[in-house]
Image (tube, rainbow, N blue to C red; front, side):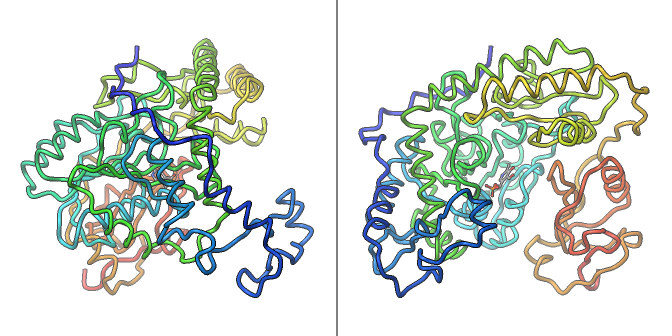
Length: 501
Ligand SMILES: Cc1ncc(COP(=O)(O)O)c(C=O)c1O
C-alpha cells in the first residue's frame, strides 16, 4: 500500500468548475473581431504558410488574439475573465491563489525563488534540482545550501530529500529565507512535504515545491496529495506535462501562511514573462483546469488502471523490472506517483539510454527519458489501452532478443560530497570570465552550469571549484550517452571559468 502524503480533501469549490471564463471571453471576441489595425501582424486574416497550416492541422491565426485596450483580460494585471479563470484554478488545485504561467515551470521556479529570497539570503535546496531553480538562485543573489543528494541504492539517482537532513541544515544555516524541494521528481517520487512544511514554518522559512511533474496529483485517491493540499507556500506545476495544456503552460499556486508576498510574486512574474502573453496558451490552461476539475477522477482512474496493468506486465518480463510500492521508505521517499513507470533494463543487457533508443528507432515509441539503468515512461490521461500495450509488447521483444552480456562500463558513482562553493552563483554568473580547455580546468572557479542531460542535475554550478573527480565523472556520463546543457561550448572542449581564478 502507498504510505502516501495524506491531506484533508480539498474543500469543495463553491465555483462552477464547468465554466472556462477566459476561453469563453476569447471565443466571444473572436466572433466579433472584424478589422484590426493592431498587433499581431497577421491580423487574423493573413493565411499561414501551407506548410505551417499542414503542421498545425488548421489555421490558428484567428484565435491568436491579444490584449488590447482592456478588452481581453491581461495576464500581468488581470481584472476580469482571466482573474476568474485563475480563481477557478486555485479552487480546483487546492490553493488560495493561482498565477497562470506561459513560460513553463521554468519561470515558476525562478519567480518563486526571486520573490521568496533576496540578495545574500539563504535558500536550502536539493542538489537534484532543475536548472531553473539554479537560475532563480543566480538571479535573486540568494546563497544556496544544498541538501546532500542520496542516490537510491538501485536506481542510482537521488529521488527524494529527508526532512531530517533539512532540519539539520535549518539549524546550521539560520536564518533561512526559503526551502525549495522538487516533489515529485522526474521519477514520481515524493518527499515528506507536510513534515518539511512544518519544519520550514517553525524556522520562519517559506516552502517552495517544484511540482512540475505533479499537476494531476490530488485529483484521484490512488495518487499522492498535491503540495497545494499539503499547504506548501508556493507550488509550481507544469500543467502541460501531465495534463492537457499546451507546452509552456504552467501554474504557480500560493497559499496564505504569512510567507508569500503576492504583490511581489506578481511583480517578479511580470518582469520575467513576455508582455504579449499568448491567448492560445492561456486558454489551454483554462480548459485543462476545467477538464481536471470535472473529469479528473474518471480520466485519472483510467490512466492509473493502465499504469498498474503495465507495471504488472513488465514485472513478468525476464530481465526487466518496473518499480512500485517498494520505493516507499527508501532515502526519504514518502510516496510515489504510480503513473510513472520506472523500467529497469540492465537485466537484459542494456543501459537505459540504449533501451530508449531501441524504443524510439525500432518501435516508434518515445519514452519520457532514460538514465544509465532505467527508461521512464509517463502514463497520462492521453494514454489508451493500445498505446500502453504497444509499450509493453516492445519491451517484451527488446528483452527477448539474445544479445551478448552487457559490456557497458561498470556503473560509476559520482564523487562523494559536492564541489566547494567559492563565490555565490550570482557573483560567478555575472563575473568576467574566459573559456579555457576542459582538460586544464581543474582548480578554477566555473562560470557556467555543467548539467549532464539526462538526468538534468548540475555537476557544477557557477561559483564552484572544478576538481578532477567531477571532470572524470562528467566524461564517464558522456561516454554513456548523456548530453550536457549549460556550457557555451556544446562540445565541452572549452569551459568558462571566472577571470582570476
Ligand atoms: C523538475 C522540473 N522542474 C521544472 C521543469 C521546467 O518545467 P517547464 O518545462 O514547464 O518549464 C522541469 C522540466 O523538465 C522539471 O523536470
